[in-house]
Image (cartoon, rainbow, N blue to C red; front, side, top):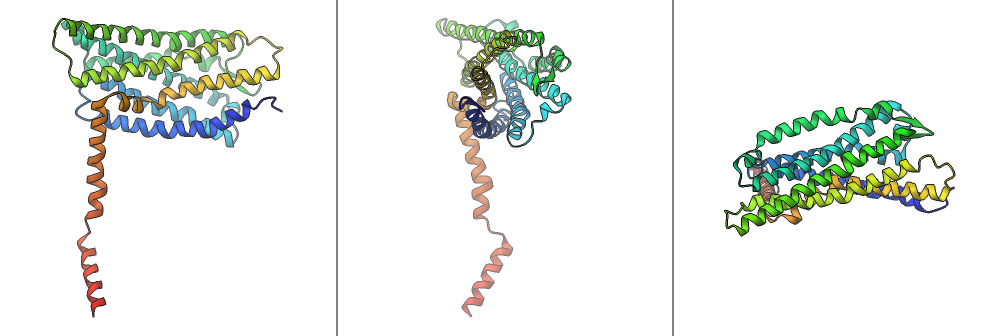
Length: 324
């Protein structure tokens, strides 16, 4: 029997919190995909990175949240099948890396586009963006191939066992917890400094759309940093205390709850992109409102106003019958 209310709180967070995450995330990322495939955005490399971010976010949320919600009502599949245990965490980890490094690449593109050097500016191109995304798509599954090899089910739990738990924690801390935020921060600071330099030297200012994209990317960086570092630190703590065998039941419940909270924050990064963009970018918000109004008038209001000719004749005949 649990000594605290934390397991019950965790179940309610899964039931309601993850369901809300899934709904908001899918709706928001679908809208992002619609926005970033429009003519005004799809010609810029940063938009391609943010489109990739939205697609990977949908895959990330569906791959991890749906099984978690399912396990709340039925048996947990990943504790019953070793193959599913390995595949689920492996693919979830890869999708998380795709999310992080899509933002990293967007930061580098924002830096290149603000430079006056022609060679650096030439790196901001659709061709370069496609190459980087293809490289990311290939290298990360290979880099994380150790996960399905070394993971296993032990004591009814799917995860890392023994010394590999510490090795994985260090790997996760470096690859996902430290490197992406460091790269994001460096290129964001360089971009801001470059913009200030251009402003003070009287050079031609960036287009409004480019400034808006830069703002969107910088805010997305903040969200990534907030979500990545606490999870990695907690993972490292769990690895360092793995061999402590005299933990009390209360301590185990507290540690389990903190671990879940850190993982809950990781899911947040897949939910927020659309809502971050629409609150931080006026051009993005105006274009979305315009798109929504056009859709409403074209597909909803217009259909209500137009009455088919057959229905019109039927209505006239019915009225004539009533008059006679």
